[in-house]
Image (cartoon, rainbow, N blue to C red; front, side, top):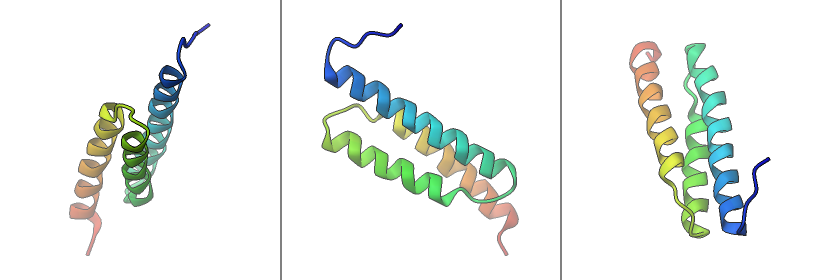
Length: 80
């Protein structure tokens, strides 16, 4: 069982978990040869939420960078 001693710890863990869920879904979309622009947009918005709530955005930014890179590759290979 995970115990959070402060609300901020819980909020950080929740933010990181949501970022992972979004990135996992975006990766599934990219794996089918489609651009996961919605996933990229969601992660960007989640990064703003982190800043607004004085939380670390390192995990969110890492996922966002990965999805941005993969979206770029898909766009280069599949866009006309």
